[in-house]
Length: 271
Image (cartoon, rainbow, N blue to C red; front, top):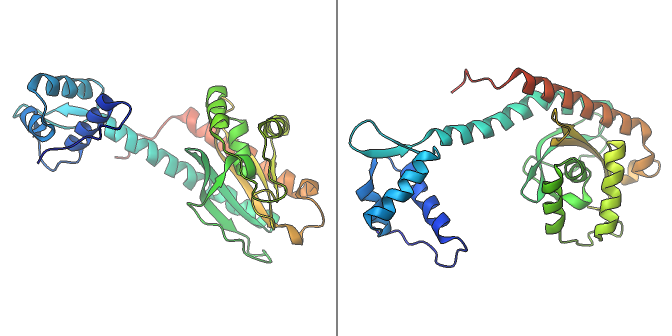
């Protein structure tokens, strides 16, 4: 069966290379050069160039017998990267649970996923008056969430600038930041203080405090924070000094844990 690549893709050679990679990686049998040529209606010379490139980059490997190809070590490395993130969340789970109990609120850890802050862990205090609907997998905009601002402020400059250029502001509440100038001022404050706020910007009834989780280079690998119903606060979320300090301490504790784990090096005993 012939494979048809989309001719509308901006980089057709890249798309074809990725399709060949998937063809080899997901096959339940060894794949020969002839199999690829026939599947994609390619001449043998073009097929060889694609396979050779994928092999040299580690995405596929030459099998010992049959002049055939199979998945390369790069797949294991990519899978291990996701496993490392899972282990990080597992390691930090006690921190977010303790933060929820210490503040009496719902606490969470967020990761940068494309142009959003994705909740990866959520913990609810036993003392919480009302449960806010939050669950792992929920996504917030970077420009109007405390965990999003915490991530954005502490990214490498090139990555931060690229994300800033991609933002399409939307007025979600009357408090939502809707200009680049205002957002940049806010991020400067986050950089200086190490704390970010969502003062009813994402949802009119919810206020949040966030802090970055930093690696040894001072860049955010994740963020954590708490969410509270604004109606149960005595004033603005920015005036909740006790909760702010608990979030700041949790962020520092989480950062130290990540930095120690990085210094120790990856555990290669698994897999």
